[in-house]
Image (spheres, helix red, strand yellow):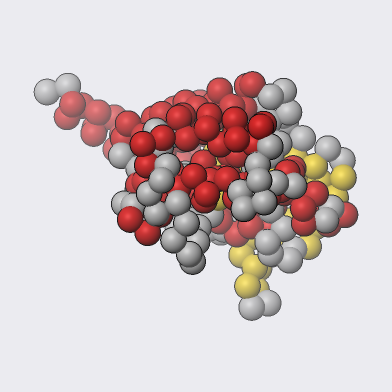
Length: 253
């Protein structure tokens, strides 16, 4: 369980996130939605302890501040919007770097379990044929799948994803979200928290939702409530549901 209490953080002395409270249970898939600049990415960075914050972030009742960085990496993993590597490693080696949190290194040798994990994720994300390619040769969509694979082989209890479908085509978006659903269901203690701009994907994928506005949680609850209620229109300044239904109608003509 991830419990966030009165979380406040930001940049340059100003708060971007202003008193967020969340309680995310094991097996949940929580989507964080809201307009640009409302604090979604900042919330994830603080939850992963990549930003200093005030308030409390606990995993199974233990403050994240009490974990060493390596201990925390076994609990929680973040895939940010701007993940990158500065050296042209192969796809296999880049993905295998996710095993560092488990005390393994592709350069020092992977365990049998580590190799199996890398191979499984390469297959799931359709990267097997690219395993020997250097990441500097990949397209944006391929590179995004490589970084997703690196996050998954870390095998954390909680995965934080900031716009994970960026650069992915429609098929790979759907495949990824379906896989994450299976991943959350398979481990008993696994949780996914994803920032998504695409409200269609969020509505289809999430089991719980948080609608953020101006650094605060304007609404938390079941997706059928948040996406059908008046809060969405108020936060986005437009009738989102009517817009989506009108767009759908063009497919039916």
